Image 1: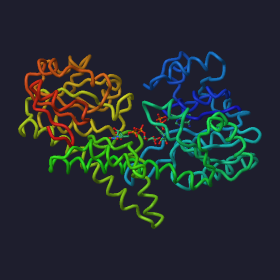
Image 2: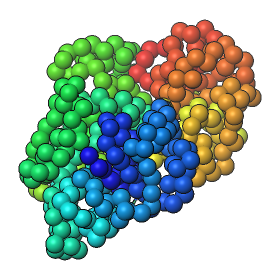
Image 3: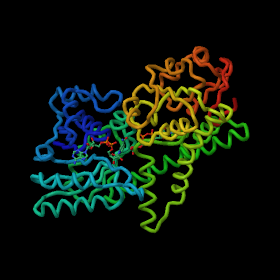
Image 4: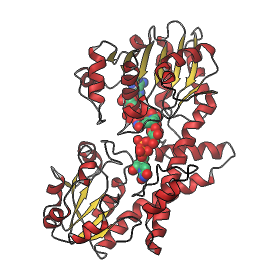
Length: 435
Ligand code: NAD
Ligand code: UGA
């Protein structure tokens, strides 16, 4: 199969590299020339474990290449995937489809022979049909089908998620399109991963329903954690025990500072907008959005309360800035709410993140960036854990306590054992656990 991947960001690059690993000929396209130049030199534009080796291997084998020339990549391709961004539109929270339609128009002009045009970006119900209209208007003679193939990978574990997905969803009505996409995913049929073939609209909706449900699950456990704090219960025992019920499942029940990232926040917003317009409001998810937004601010209040209500003039060490571990992605990270709120209250921030500091510099101001976790803690008045990087798990509580001038440690990811931290002399605050 010859595949063109339009957009070489988190999804396009990982999907393109994985398709080439399946044995297909893949050309990844991006309009960002700098990004393509770096990729040609095997420099990854994003932090994603294992991606550089996968790209290097398949580029060397001649199955994976990079270009800014969309027309050349589309010419002769069996399938063209659109994997461009669909950020929240300012004002109404709907998905901004500007990049998707611009890509569709460019693709239309370049089509030669029968091609499946596949939306991999997360797009609202009805977008596939509109993409088809754009292509038809631009090139009435084009021979094509549209399909929706939403992507379910997570940043930080993207390659594993792509190569061993819980399911693949393919939405299309065209028989040729079904055949081509089944061939594209053939290696996954061979290892018996479920492949759901459905209508375009259904595939589009599945993606939003999945992300909204997961966001709801996280928000549920966060609220249960609040209750645990009030009644002296342990949220991890609650999460584990409810999760052992197969109808509930153990995943996405880890409490934290509120979900963030480039997807849950924007996708829940777009989902409720679509639902309102369709006259089927999603009250649950509307509540989830509200609760999660409020939670991020509450987290800052919680830190201030841990410092007895006054952080003015204090230096707070912040461990982790990315919205989760194993990524450099700062989009909608809880740190973007918590850090400015602490600064507003007069605190000075010294922060360390293993991968996200370059991105953080673009979004957060007046931060003293440290070169390591212990370095961030040295001489600070107290500390806040915002992202659960593995390297933070191994930090020695006694050494951390020695480096800090004060005893406050607010762990918003429950990385440490309360007993270890208390023993080391900390006033340790975590989420939903008795100290
Ligand atoms: P991203 O911003 O990292 O990458 C998008 C890329 O597309 C950018 O590099 C941009 O330059 C490029 N681009 C835009 N228009 C183009 C055009 N006309 N031609 C060529 N390149 C173009 O975005 P992302 O995080 O990869 O997300 C892409 C889509 O996938 C979104 O809809 C998102 O919701 C969805 N998604 C993301 C994830 C994730 O983990 N990030 C997971 C599943 C689904
Ligand atoms: C999420 C979904 O998990 C993917 O399936 C989906 O493809 C992707 O969105 C997308 O559509 O782009 P991602 O945003 O990379 O993936 O990260 P997650 O691991 O889902 O985490 C999202 C947020 O929830 C993070 O802020 C994380 O810290 C938080 N979270 C997650 C919790 O607080 N607790 C949990 O138990 C799980």
